[in-house]
Image (cartoon, rainbow, N blue to C red; front, side):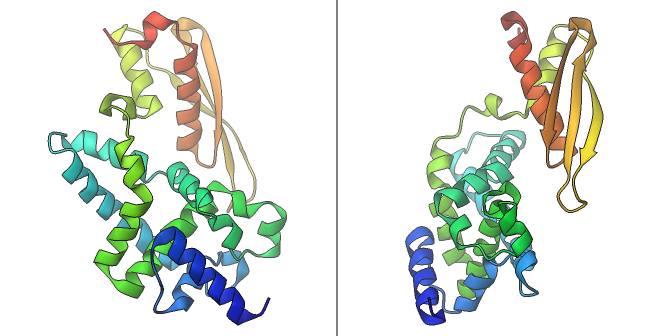
Length: 236
């Protein structure tokens, strides 16, 4: 496929999935270029897009939930802009199929990796901002997240698993869980963490794995919540 045809197909896909036609197509191409594929990669655009996502989502939530307090809005925003959420959106819109990756990332399935997909989506938003300004980018973010905003669960359900587990145990006068890092594996740029969560008073323990220690702890806490007897999962 020649460069002109490839560029036209990329532009068509960008317009269909994001509702934006780039005046500067090189920005769109850069947003899809992982650092493993060259020096003109998407990390600076990712930085810009990450900030923009947070800004626009905060505005969307402020408008949609006039009675919610700061803590509730923060939890809702964290849900909408989490790496998992952004990676799901990126995958649904075919971002992985258009990524430019180095040979190493291609061999290890980088086009499916949560962090790479989420970063690329943020980079696309950053590229749109540089290409067309605030209003055009806000429209793209609303297009990407509008449906998920309408489907947000109740505020209480948006508390992260560690917080929910702590509250459940405190309500029952049970000592807080202990989290222990049990393993770290992988290369420095692609590490995996393993964590053990133990509630000694109930003789229960779970494990979690993740790309960060925090993510591993959250998964272990979520599994612990699932193990608790039904009467201990609910607050009084």
